[in-house]
Length: 145
Image 1 (cartoon, rainbow, N blue to C red):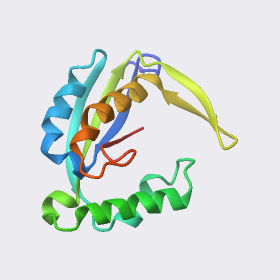
Image 2 (cartoon, rainbow, N blue to C red; image 1 turned 90 degrees about the horizontal axis):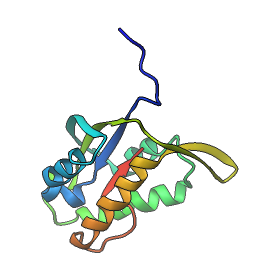
Image 3 (cartoon, helix red, strand yellow; image 1 turned 45 degrees about the vertical axis):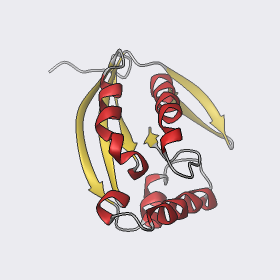
């Protein structure tokens, strides 16, 4: 088989939070309709406990522990009174991006490469769905990257 470089394609993960569960299929279709982007797989997972899950998810990110814990606590509060099957599940999508564009950025003295296509997608989906989430706070519709 021929080797594929990150300049030709890039596979990234998108996590749809339970706050937008009623629209998971709609969001998946919107992502699949983005030029250069293909959803190549998906799976639904149950989150047993939000704090350890969030800490593991963001372990490689340059984000403070207090911010991660606050986000986990927000999900715990949001879940109160909701059916467990809806309040504790996430949908993971694997996306292929053809001819991706990257940018370097520095945060807290750490330089990383960010996928410009995925950043644009994140902002577009968040803007479209944040009004549908009760007590919305930043970044509770989707995680990507």
